[in-house]
Image 1 (tube, helix red, strand yellow):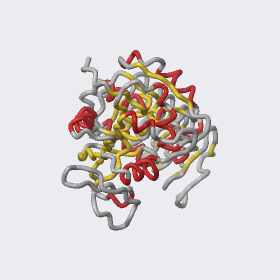
Image 2 (image 1 turned 30 degrees about the vertical axis):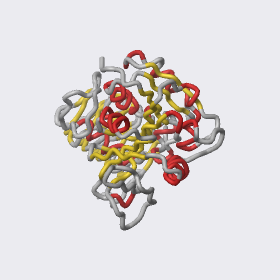
Image 3 (image 1 turned 60 degrees about the vertical axis):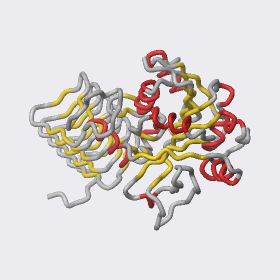
Length: 359
């Protein structure tokens, strides 16, 4: 077991996951299967590997699901506490809301949507070494325009928080992981919605608090959209995104026990096939995610798409960049492209939806 770091961890998992609907109608986003385990499992394993022993989950949407699955955290060597928000409090309010459960002087806060590969111990070391009041994990990205930028000076101190812009002055973005000295969590106003990015951090800067940046170029992806969810999952399967849950994982596909793969089926691009799922002869799965019990019939093609629990893709159908809800059925020869979403239990008849002529 790793040495105890003396820090608590807080994971904010209250979001509704609206961008991943319809999958998040039945399960909160951090519980969606990602390379065979609930997404949050990868983060909990990284936290445990860094020597942190106490985790508080800040829940809201479908709060009971988390405790039902993870319980007291013993299987990870963790102690997990749960705090449920009754009204949405934002990132800052969510952190302040779990204060009664915190015991350590330093608190590492995580956004429960992020798939990351950074060394958590290194962030804590930066926090200690610079005697920071708050340390922010900043990750360098090739195209920072879609994110808020966080410039730092030559000592690594944060100098500003900039909104999204077409001409960013730095490639450093806020990676959604922070270490707070406990007293700075106590200063966040209680009982109302507060944003750390827009309210807490800018206020601390003007007050002269030490906000330190820990900058690296580690693996980082916000898993909020179907496109990012599919990519992050594929990166885990191919060993591009590291996870203690998948040691030594490197391959074009990950097939779970009880799945049936017919001869002549092609599984590439970091495809995941869940437990009890079935893939028919000549089917082509490229960067596909099949949840448990899903069925892809003979000659069908599924590319960069998520197929929910027990859903069915009929013979010679094509699903590309789509999300198929739990228990839905896509008929033979249908074509679903460019962000199509099929709601749970919906049945599309054979040839019922096409993006091209039926020849």
